[in-house]
Amino acid sequence: MRQMLSQNQCNELSKSIFARLKTIVDFENQNVGIFLPIIDQREPNTFLLLSMYDTNNTKFYSPIVQSYEDDMIFYRINAEDEIKIGKFNIPEPISNEKINCRDLNVILIPLLAFDIYGFRVGYGKGFYDKYLLDSKENLLKIGISLFDEAEVIDDINQFDIKMNYCITPNKIYEF
Image (cartoon, helix red, strand yellow):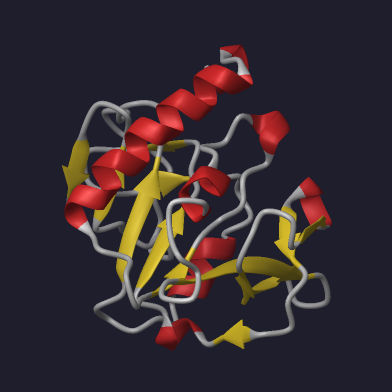
C-alpha cells in the first residue's frame, strides 16, 4: 500500500501524523529516538518532524546498525543534511554523539503494520525489539504508521515489545 503512494502523498500523511503526535507528547527538552525514513520504501517522512523543532532544546537521536553485532546504537542528529546512507539503505546520522537507550524519553518506531493490541511488524530483523529490551520502563514507545491497524498479527512471540501508542493520519491508538 505504501508503494502506491507518491512522495507528496506520503509527506502529507506524515504531516497529519506529526500534528496528532504533538497533541500527546511535548518533545521540548526531551531526548527523542527517531527513525530516519527509507524514502524509496515510502516510510513516514520523519525529516519533516525534525524541521518542526529547535534541536538545541529537543535532542533527536537516530540508529546506526552495528554490522558486527546487528545491534543499534543511536546517535545525535540535528538536521537532514547530517546523514549518510548506511546498511540496508537506511539513512544514518554522521554524528559521534551517542546516547544510551536508558537516557531516551521517547522513541518513534517504524513499522509495516500493527495490531489492536499494540504489537508491530517491522522488517523482520528484530532490531527495535532487541534495543528496547534494555530501555527504561517508562520509555514512551510510539509507532508511526501511514495506515490504520490490522486486526491481528499472528506471529507475535515473547520477544516482541508492545508500543504505548501508534499514530496514523486518522487516529491515535493507545495501548
